[in-house]
Image (cartoon, rainbow, N blue to C red; front, side):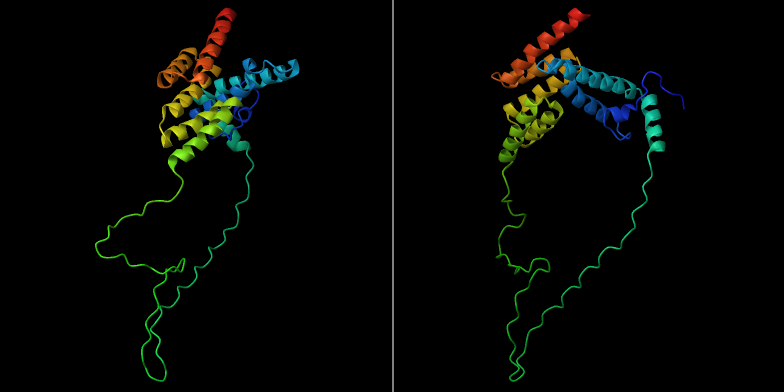
Length: 245
């Protein structure tokens, strides 16, 4: 196999992957590293921290460019499969034997008079709860669940997504807001999902797609402050990028 002179480190290891991921998973890993180490996110850091973050960002970017090529991705995946140490197979233990079912209860008889005693109510083998016979004419079907309402779960996911967004972990925030929008498709949840998607596009300099996501978020929720902040950041970064070119 030919060596890749442009990238001497294993790109899968640079992105923290196992070597069997597909291109969407590779892109997600790169975006996660870029969101944490992009130089534009480190304005308040020291020069040493900025230099380390820049080196991490450039390494992740180069690894993503290498793995974006199908032949290179297959080559590195096969190389990792050959160098990965084999672990001995764990001994197979037989499954535990299931407990024997209890013998059915029979009506008890008094030894003296032979008068039958009323049989005991039937019990379920798992929980031991008496089986109640529904009255005739009662509607059949599953009973309503007494669990947590979807709106409460969606609110919890939204709060966790805001924490991830403040930490610039856009991949995690996007996942949380997407789940919240599926449980409770409110304009707020859907707008925040678009805001996180816009930040991911912005971190990889897909400025047109980022602008489209932020503007769609404002259409859904005109008072969305996070979308307006994203548009302001987009204008600054795109302007610096055009001047640098």
